[in-house]
Image (cartoon, rainbow, N blue to C red; front, side, top):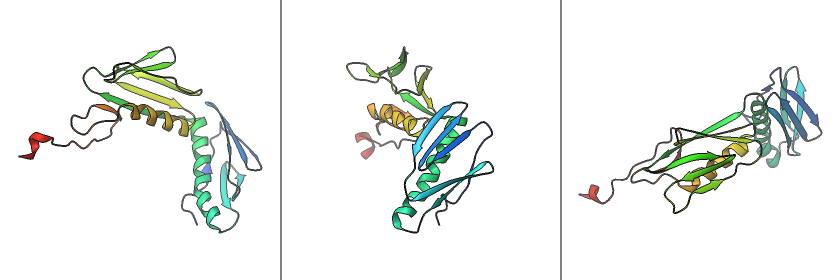
Length: 179
């Protein structure tokens, strides 16, 4: 039995859940999300919690059991509290700024890089070097964060680039460190 899949999902008071065959809709104070759950699992709602069970013990059912439970748990958490990721920019002259809804990054290229966030995500900049991405969909927040980091990932010699807040980058010694 899946260790993750068998755990019940607690539902906060402010969250409404509608289950229609394999489509689950979660509505809360922050917004509304909808997800189609794989065919190999069933979803039941009992006394303020959701249970995810697999139909049989086939390999596909076992694969999707924990996945379906995690997707639903992320939806419930997203509409009640939301998700937030932070990026940090390091490097001389590297900075970020907001221009309307767009994020403008100056990270050592000959031109500024402009990013337009998808609907449902908010992007904010603090102190020109910290980017905050927030929203109710964990997948979209993570994808946008990874795309922004991929523009200039931290390099191993000086550590310049865009990194997750708290990320440790292993420093290499370089040529002078060989002696």
